Length: 295
Image 1 (tube, one colour):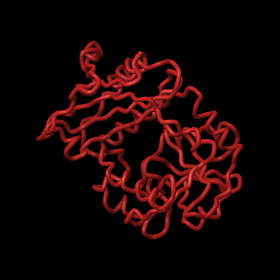
Image 2 (cartoon, helix red, strand yellow):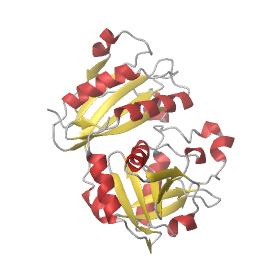
Image 3 (cartoon, helix red, strand yellow):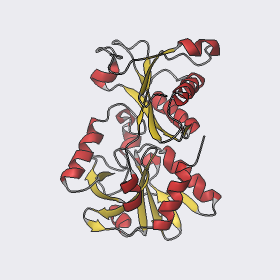
Image 4 (tube, helix red, strand yellow):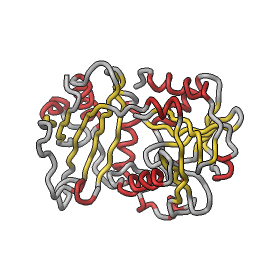
């Protein structure tokens, strides 16, 4: 069993013969070179990716993550991923991962070698970070202006705001800025005062007995973890809905979380240094559900 594992993938077109799946990827030794320097992934960030949690040997939410990979590829005008091929590779990676503990499985699809006529791909598995403190004690969050207004996504689709692209430099810069402000993470806002998402997470807010999240049309990534939690809420007699929220409405909320596939649900305990109420019972419920096997 390997804790760190990398496969270089030759992406196949939709409809390819399943007998070719096994020969469409190869393992890369730890520390060995994998991507060419003229691949559009390392020198332009031109590609899409997904990160899946592997918890006690089970890969979580494979279907939703692959569906979002397909959508991101469509937005970025990449060839449609063969989801059966990616499922086969994910299964092989899972079989090579320890059966206990938490791991992160990243799959990526690049436009390929310059001039980008054929895509390249890879799967990379690493041990997950320890998010116990964030899940149990919560996180301090700083709001950061994303520099766009609420209508930017519809007005400028070339910004690729709804795609999970490899171009994450701005997201990482936002987290560094949040830490400079004494926070653990950031929450993006629009220039006209609406809340959006974290650099690597979705926002869920409790308003009384309603659980809400900003709509994807606002120019955010449609979170797989957020959608799964909304399904859980509906199954347990609660409601989840999409709603535009202002910063002031968030500050007045009964509770809020940043949620993601690997970190799971982290309650926000402070927003811009102002304390936020915490719903400890809902937090325990969310994380218990998110740690359960889900396909």
